[in-house]
Length: 114
Image (cartoon, rainbow, N blue to C red):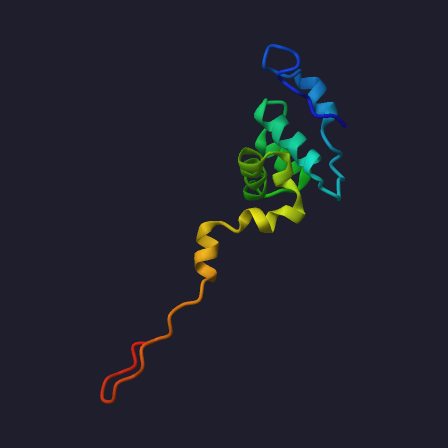
């Protein structure tokens, strides 16, 4: 299995028949970053449709789009399962994890707002 480099052949497009041959097996159980990248590249260059890729590899559209976003943001290393948690730890996630202020104490005669 190889990644077809559209820039290497000079015209910016990959040979569709060659790209299909380079796709991982539909029986793939272990999804390493390079295999995910090959599938994303094949969909992007039109060698295989998004629907066909999802059906062939039993992926949800959301999972495929997550692969695509990871490549766009972090390159192929972003597809490593061991890196997902680090990359997902965005500013919003950090803010959600920060300690919250305790609820104000109840005042006699007034309902507790918390």
